[in-house]
Structures are given as C-alpha cells and as structure tokens.
Length: 230
Image 1 (tube, rainbow, N blue to C red):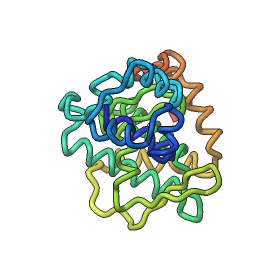
Image 2: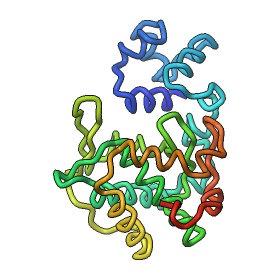
Image 3: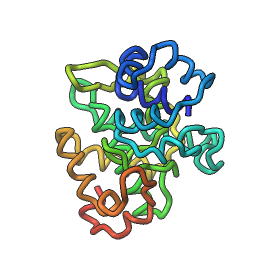
Image 4: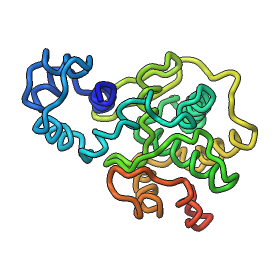
C-alpha cells in the first residue's frame, strides 16, 4: 500500500503536508505510512478513498498496491519496456507543435493504442491492467514511468501537467505494425483538446460497462464498431 499512496499523491501533485492535512494526520505520520512503518486505520482509508475517488477495495487490492505481488505476465521486464516505449511514442507523435502534451491526454492515447492493438491483433502492446478510475482508463504503471523516467520532462502549466521528451527514443521493443498503429492514433487525435479525447474514451463500451475501480478487460473493445475503437 505504501507504493500506492506515493503514486496517488504524486499523480495528483500533492505534497506530503497537503495530503496529510486532507487525511487529518501529521506529516510525520504520513511519512511513516509511505515508508510502510505504519498501517492505515479504517478511518484513514475511508478518507484516502474519498480524496482520490477510488473505492476502498482498490486501495486494498494487493495487485495494485504492491507490484511485487502482481501476476508475472503484467510485470516482466519486456512488458514494462514495451509499455515505456508506447508512452514515449505517444509523446513523440501526439504532442502539439511545441513538443508538449497534457498528462491526461497522453494517458488516453496510451490506453487507446493498447486496446486498438488488441482489437486488430488480439494482443495488446503491454498487457498491463487498465482500471476504470475517475480520471479515465489508466494503468497504474503509467504514473511510475511519468514520475521516474529520465527521458520524460514534466512541468506545470496552470492546472495542467505538461509532458515532453528530454531526448528522442532510440531502439524500440514495438513491432512495425504496433508503431504504425501508434502513429495513426496519435495523428488522428493530434489537434484535439484533452476533454475531447476524455469524452471519447468515456463513450466507449469498455468504460460504460465497467464499474468504478474495476479492471477493464481488453476483450470488451471487440464489441465496438471499427470507427469507435480510436
């Protein structure tokens, strides 16, 4: 759980003091939680659930809160590298003319590419689990890469978090067909606003069928009409 608290706090651009204040605990107490030195009380769990709009069962889910306990298919070195390459390619081809893209729009492009590849090839690029969270379909590993990868730059622009590349990606794990799919999807959405792509993903069958916090099965995308896949 300690890793999940850190990921959620950083993803929402909260300092330790800010999150501690919202939960109603001291900053040293939050530090202890993030280090795994102390367990959360039920009351604190409820507050964390409300703050981030995530069901308590998701917070308590070991697969989400501790990657070391997730199934091996989702956490192999190759699948993580492929997911990283997917993110880098979406930044490269999906950014505006200034080379930047909002974090939310990037997350949606990554989701669309992974599910579109499953639709066309019956095999996603990463195989990671996407959950129906309030901000849209997203794999928790997305936050890990955005927060820690040295090839990615993150800066604030008003209320938006802007993402860009500090260096162009070199050798990729993606196949030529997968890379072509990423380019096609990014080209389609290149001039669209963040809210437009958010609304599109929320209109798709996978989002509408699943409940908050659920893992979105890749196979649900096969129920979409071809024009609505991306």
